[in-house]
Amino acid sequence: MNLDAWLDYIANQHQQTIDMGLSRTEEMVRRLQLQQPAPKVVTVAGTNGKGSTITALESLLVGAGLRVLSTLSPHVVRFNERLRLNGAELSDAEICAAFAAIEEARQQAPVIALTYFEFSALAALWCARENQVDVALLEIGLGGRLDAFNVIDADIAVITSIGLDHEKFLGNTRDAIGAEKAGILRSGQRVVLGADMPESVLARCRELKLQPLCAGVDFVVDEAKPAVWDLSWGDERQANLPLGNLAPSNIALAHQAALGLVPVSDAQLAATASQAFIPGRMQQLTHRGRLLVHDVSHNPAAAKFLCRQLAQRNLRPKHVLCAMLADKDHAGVYAEVSRAVAGSWILVDSHGDRGISAAQLAESMQIQAELAPNMTTALEQAVARTEAGDVILVFGSFNAIEQSLWLRSNDNV
Image (cartoon, rainbow, N blue to C red):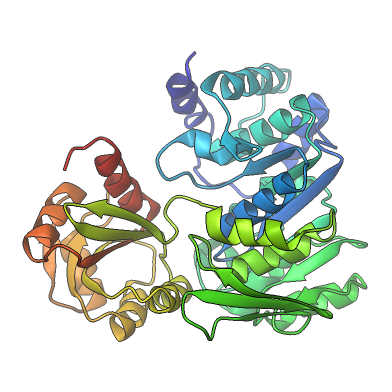
């Protein structure tokens, strides 16, 4: 089967899209002998910022000469974005080979029903081992304690942030969600924590006798100056780092994780700050003379963070295009963005099992806005109401960003 056929196949091997638990993955890891996919493993959990932290860490480690397998989830345009070797997407053939090996093992008696994410996680572990990498970087998809990647004992754990999202699965408070995320922690690990961790995370560190490196205490990001930022840790300080695609706070988390594996030069840190890139995170593209800024922020904490990043980059959107899934805090996201962005809004239909129409989204946000059935129409409306040089913000669900980026890459608009 080609990759598209495999993706269709793995999406239909389990009755539930999300079925949290470790037993299926544990048995598959045993069958495939993937308990140690790489000499060193780093897991990254958190509500927001995981992909950016993985990308920055990958850049730092590859720059230091290590061979690195990275995972990202979900993808924005192509499944291959989820599996990267030294910063480059794995080929269709490599991913298909991984799926074939997993399927052969899965069919052994008793046959195991795997979710789409479990197939993807196992493929990442298999590709890490087969490519004989030095380090595997594993992005936790949902929660931590019951995430498929948590069957692997990592050497380093990073928790980027804790906010309210996926409450149906993780709990309705930051403390409850923090406890789930802290499930990735192990005794003896190097642990790096983002700012403002809830007590449940800190308590778990104490239980395991860990000494976490905490943002704002053990390392500090200073974003007071326009277009550049400073990073301080211990007696060291790197000043005037360039402001690129990735948020400084996530680069700082990655830097502290990297120091547990290799020395990081000033030049490597500066190169990561200016060059490391991940689709859909403050991604800027020019379209008919307008600057489109794409970001997958889809909960209030991420929306607030997005607005800080826009302000630091002196980006002032004249129009906001937004599509969201049905189970998100629409009003909370609108409150954060509208507080910082004065532009007019166009709401776009989202599709799939968790989709919501633009009209329903407007009702949930309690606003009056233009409505569009798809991203093509929304972009046409935004272009018609702006001028060359204006900024248009496209944000919300991964699906919304996928639509816009796909349209741009295929010159359909």
